[in-house]
Each structure stands twice: as structure tokens, then as C-alpha cells.
Length: 126
Image 1 (cartoon, rainbow, N blue to C red):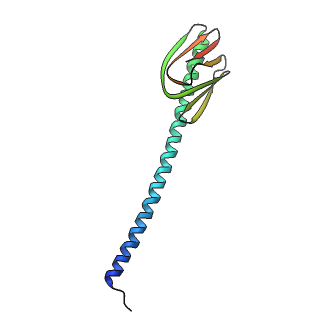
Image 2 (image 1 turned 180 degrees about the horizontal axis):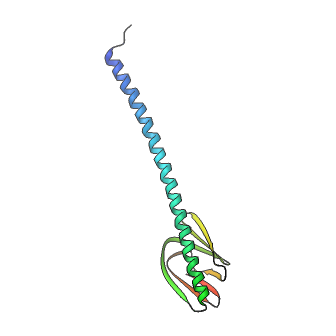
Image 3 (image 1 turned 180 degrees about the vertical axis):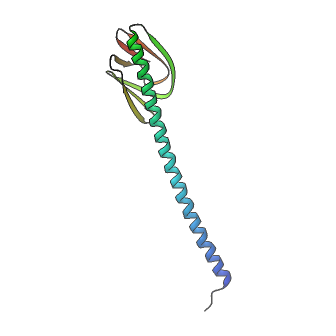
């Protein structure tokens, strides 16, 4: 019993094609996981940078006394305040920072243009 050369070549090409398809699938899955991890790192860094920046400005406004204020722009980050802690959320990734000498009050959750103002020892962010 002999296998025709034409049938053997077709079977080899089908086997080779199936291996290529499997490798392509593994590659696409791996690239998706890499992108997901990269986005996580980016958003975590963005949240931490926003929290540190706002806490630094709040500390400065707090130290300068009643009536002092600063304005700046911030995009894609929501803020929460509790006591002297500030929490920044960027795309589901959360970071925190402290303002040791003043109590913080956040006016709204999602901010683009922010004013940080010292009002009788409390720092208002909104």
C-alpha cells in the first residue's frame, strides 16, 4: 500500500498550517496580557502622581494660611478625601497621599480644573 505523494504533501501543509494557527493564537493571547499589565502599571502611576501632586499643593496652601489658593488642571482622575488623607482613582487604580497639618475636604468626585483653597485651616479641593 502506497500513499500518493500529492496526498502526503497536502497532509504536511495542513499540519504546518495548524501549527502556525496555534502559535498565532498563543501570540495574540500573550500580547493581550502584556497590554493589560502595561495599562495597569500606567494607571497606577497616574493615580499615584495625581495624589502626590495634589497633596503637595494642598500642603503648600495649608502652610501659607487662610485664604490662599492654587488652581490647576487634572484629567481623568477622581478624588476622595477623608481627614488628612487624599485618595486618587484613575481608571480603577487607586493611590493615596497624606497632608499632615490640615484637614481635607473634597467637593466633587471627578475633577478637571481644580482649585485648592485654605479656608480656616481646612483645605477645600474642588
